[in-house]
Amino acid sequence: MRLSRDKCAFVRAVLHAHSTESDGLLEPQRVVEYYASRGYGVVALTDHERITRIRVKEPLVIPGAELARDRGLLGEPYHLVILGVEDEAVLRMKDPQEVVDFARSSSGVVVVAHPHWSGLTVSDLLSLKGYSAIEIFNTGCEVEVSKGYAVAHWDALLSKGVRVWGVAVDDAHRYTIPPIDADGGWVVLCLRELSTDEVLRALKEGRFYSSTGPDVIEADLSDSSFEVALRGARRIYLISRNGKGFSVDSDVVEWIYRDRNRALAMLSRYGDVELEAEHEGTFTKLYVRISGVRVELRSRGRWIEWVRVMGLDWDSYARIEVVDELGRRAWLNPLFR
Image 1: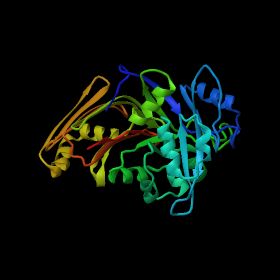
Image 2: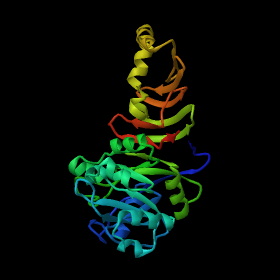
Image 3: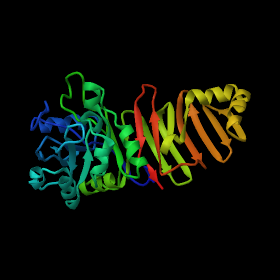
Image 4: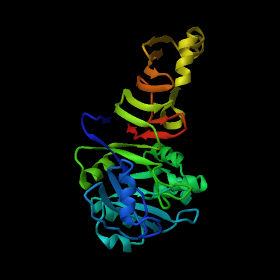
């Protein structure tokens, strides 16, 4: 998987937002203006139980809705965000699987909304088939009741072999009234053109990353190599099944540079080690080889700007997660085996 600004335009998108057409505080036009003023190129209006329609020149507005259907094992309904579906017949469907199947047959995308907030179990998510993504971060659910993250649900699904993407969203209702539930979670789409069809293709193919803060400049992920350029990153995780993976942060890089001998002694516990660290202008460059795993990294001050990992043993899936100085995160979609 490659996300490159040479191959596509990086466009920020909000995939879950409410207006006065359901229980949001801003009229549809003002919702669109709110996001346009903050640099979003794609806005999905996802009012409850209805498809809100609005015509604007820009940004691109994607038709959508949020539908609550059936109940999971803990007694709470599935909330499904449908994107790109114009046919209002979907609003009359009662079974969540029927909703997903209809949306897919209409070339749309289905995202399972806020599974942590909804009390959905992994078994609930496994029983539903064919959705494209789950919300791994939901701004509104996080600021309201600290149930915005569903990364554990995501990793469980990936570990069970479900090939599903993760999205960060707002689920905005208040916008300007604290606690602010807008402009806190988004996806950055890799688009070859700005159109509804291309947005839906990118969402289906996983051609995007999700974020609450850090920027991914470029990513090139393959079976044997993971390379990513970043802005605002303090820590990087490479995560696979059942605890496999590794992490590195800027403090570790600085420690290795300042205390190379101690770092060598510690890392030698994990295998044969080769280690190089040097300052080059304002950059710190690091090369570490532990047995067959090689890590190359470049940092500037407290920020990691580029990292490449080669030869890492991973199982079933592998994904990258990035953390900035404020604890905000970005997530790249997984590779699969």
